[in-house]
Image 1 (cartoon, one colour):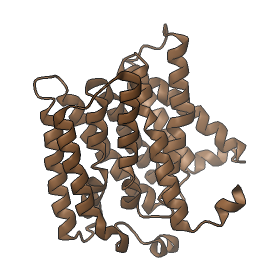
Image 2 (cartoon, one colour; image 1 turned 90 degrees about the vertical axis):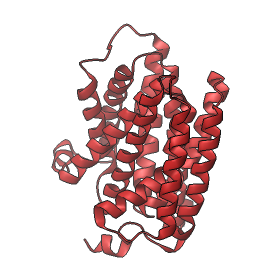
Image 3 (cartoon, one colour; image 1 turned 90 degrees about the horizontal axis):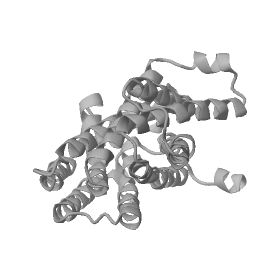
Length: 300
């Protein structure tokens, strides 16, 4: 199996990691909703399980504790904060609005990534991408309109914050290809545990709840995030974000199967608009690099 993977082209490997990571991460919404505890509690236990899981993984790969500490630098701390912000906003979004609303808004990540790349590194953005950005924002507005008066607007806004943090972090990962992805994910877990500790309910939950949180924090959550982070070593960050529709479709399917949650008409319409925006903005990406080219990254 490893020999087959080693023969894959860098682009094919990056695509596989991005697609696989998105599919695994799609279970975050399922577990967050199934664990019938507060958003602070999910955030705390997610962080508490992620950090030791990443430490054990690094030590099994031969990293010494002293060497692990020396790898922490400013870009890694920035990545950890962005990832913690993204995961925390996502968890609270799922707790405050429908799963379908959250993941349809998350599907606009490619557009957000393009916008952030233009703001952060003044990268040239084609008119087609700007058209996609405008259309995507319109689609998100339609999705959110279905929450007006229903108490779900805060969750929709948190979803927008989640994709903003996440898209920015993709660019950080892409700009620092040698960054230890395991350590960055582990540090994000520590940040999440610290910021949620005061409000979290630490004890008194059922065995099933702790098992769900353990699975999310030690297995599915870090596995999906490391896969996506590693994908940025092989393909541009914006291309990684192109696979968010996999998470969107899978998460909506989980919500329908396990919670009998049917998307609203506004979600269907807004999702279609976001999908059109996705097509409009991303068609030219096959011949463009939205972040630093690998040649420039390798030279650093």
